[in-house]
Structures are given as structure tokens and as C-alpha cells.
Length: 77
Image (cartoon, rainbow, N blue to C red):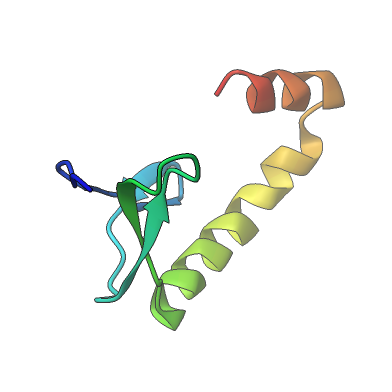
């Protein structure tokens, strides 16, 4: 099995990619050939707290956004 350069997947918090403060990762493998594709962080409690606080700050504006605009935002990824 050949392992290519492995991508480390960061967290997405408060609208930006952010590295995890954790030091452990889980492997993400292609299920068809078992090739290692990426490493995803085992985020820490501090990482989760940052994400939860960012979500709490964003919620009032998101709640006020009309459903059709929310649907467009979710499908434009």
C-alpha cells in the first residue's frame, strides 16, 4: 500500500479554518482501497468550547435569516 502526502483536516470555527489544539488524529481512509487520505483531529474540549461560543454568537443572525436564504447558504458549499 502506498501512502501519499496526507492532508490534515482542520476544524471550521467562526467562519474560518482553524487547527485543532489536540495532538491526536484519526485516519480517514478510502473505503474502496483502504488508502490513507487524510487525518482528522481529535479536538479538545477547548476546541469544542470555541466552536460552541462561535455558534452561540452566530445564532441570532442565522435565526433572523429567511429560510430561502438559509437554504442557499447551505447549498453553495
